[in-house]
Image 1 (cartoon, rainbow, N blue to C red):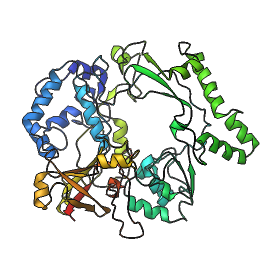
Image 2: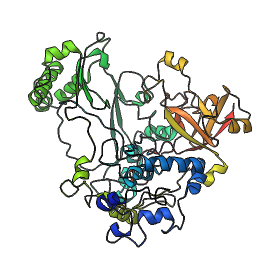
Image 3: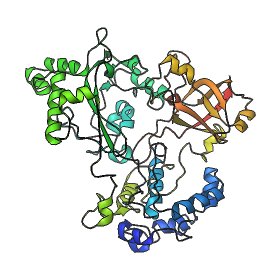
Image 4: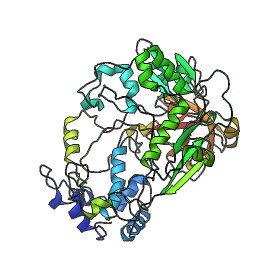
Length: 516
């Protein structure tokens, strides 16, 4: 639509981008390997990406797609912003790049009121954090593949598993230090598989968990240390995602510390002390937690004299300041002068066609249903809408952020559980086929596991798709049937990572639902 109705910003694409059409296609790219050819059906697949083509995949009527395309193409400026959900798919890298193409095609990058297609940012007042030592180990893996690194670490390679800094891992993970996180079990894919990996103590030999509550993950700790809560100790924190208004919040204890719990700084200081006096001195620099707070804030004031002094901030509680430069516009300097302010890409421009990704796609080991592409194309994926597995597990399942929790935080609060019960959303057409009525107890299952929870029968979700609030606390007899009565979505999610980033694909799952 945008191309055929001449709603693209051709001068922008010519000046700032690589790979939109033949004249900006980089050297070494195949003929007709550009984005315009792909969209018009002149590329390798020979399929025009029309509204009708998209409608068949998405279920959205073609006339609505046409209307949206015209609205985006004819609105100046147009602000296109994507959350984290689209990328948390089995083909999430391609989805994120495809969304970013909307502001790129329409020339809305680097201007007031426009955007790059990425998440919004924020103005942050000067902040100083506790210094950390440099990690001498430069080899890295994606966060999502930590269980792979336990189970088969030395088998993991750069070209198959995305290992960075080396061609392969030399050793597996033997020790886990888990601070303030529920990702060992609750927030990580395929809980039953993860459980089995962690049961073998010849693999991961020690797990340390530091937290405030007995979370699903804390139950797997060899050493479990109770931390103080944020509201039991002093700290200074900045805002997060508040537009062009910056905040400093001086947190003061709402209650005294209870029982034998200790703050994380005390815990780590005691660990450092047992590693030797020199380590203890390097870590603490002779300061208490309160003295560190005063020291770091003094450094902030030295950098930013407009800040109130320490005692005044403590008295104020909250200090607010608007960005003195007004509203920040991402890539504005690049838009004004792309030669003087190139991007951090090999070409210095927006790379619609990426030669680097073409090289990765040719070199990496990929499965038949995995795609890495130099272009932001559409690609079918494992456990997607057209996977043959749907003959056995016909419903797609994705997760959403639930109003009663922040991920899994507050998932153990009984008042919130009662006010906002965990449910699986299902369309009335799918429910009728299965004899399911609103409120019925159902089992949601696939080869990875089973959860039981009430059904919410609603037309607010499309046929063939189901959804659950993510973050509910896992509650299963892991020595018995492993049926999860807490309805944690990760009992059902796949542990297979996305092709490029080796990231979390937790919204790409196939399941079936039956009345209990």
